[in-house]
View 1: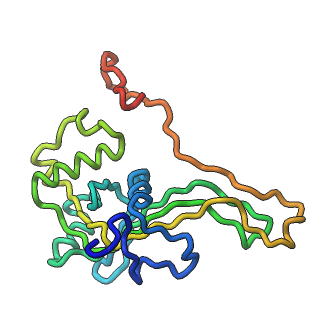
View 2: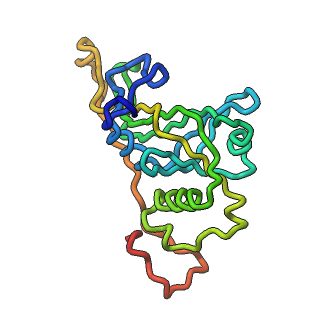
Length: 220
């Protein structure tokens, strides 16, 4: 951001937590890593005055976050009617573990999350739209965009993409074990962390896949 630290985003009142401020992160490396690892995000916006939060896929190219949608979907229609961009809040979260404490009050979750605030615009430029759609495919699995049929004009017309500049951004994370009160440590209850991770299973070929087609290297 102009006049700021090029390695970090500048905190704003909307990106400063009211609780656990020590968990907030603003460095670009942390923000980018979380956005790139998360497979889905949640898009929040106002639709005719009503709050709506929708899950969708996303991809980051540099300092722009692209969000997938349908041209007839609510976010795209709302963005079309917002000449200065659609005010949105986008969140992405990774859950790393369940934190089990001796006291009910101190149970928690280890997590990494990102919140992005800003005005989203509809991507109309054909070249930018194709780049964004390719990035969305490669975000699901790197290398996939070059290993499938590209969208035809009808499919491009039916697919919507929103672009959101990464300007007003913050990350937040919790790690480590439970924070029991000293007087509770002698209680006869198990305490600790149950690690969680998202792992891929063995690829399952489509029922109608030609057996002669080998498994791509990026899926091995």
